[in-house]
Length: 223
Image (cartoon, rainbow, N blue to C red; front, side, top):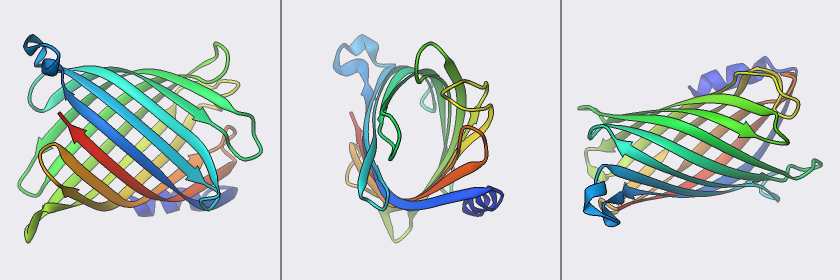
């Protein structure tokens, strides 16, 4: 997956590269904490803070919330909302809002756990010109035999623009994210992860592109 990201970068006419970091906290749990009858109901709360320009510039935050329903112990459907305030260097402030459905499937195996997440975003960037953007994530977590609380983690997420919009760019490839790192499970309720994230972004016209080399830290809370 990492080689694939660098292969795409080699095809770009003009590639800008920089370093930064992403930090996130994700909370997810059953709505039975509200009412025992809502045991299959789910809630998802997430916040992120993102830095670029070699750690010199805060450029983006993210707040995401969703409600879901557990179809089984492996499959969950979601309906959610994302707010994405963005201040890129040299550009105007943008307050993007997204609404989306999502589906997640978790597959335990003898070698580790695979997770598949499909989202279909409706991006409200400026005005009423809505961009539709599906995104697909494949994630793998492999606990180490000598220390089961420590896991190797990798994932890839691919984004496509379905339609061309004035502020959201031309249709086609949008971006790809590849992560590799380690996770530590403190308990069934808390897990921390850290590692390297490579984000390859295509611009509005598919000519000038950006590759972010990022340190990513995450805290997951289950309830």
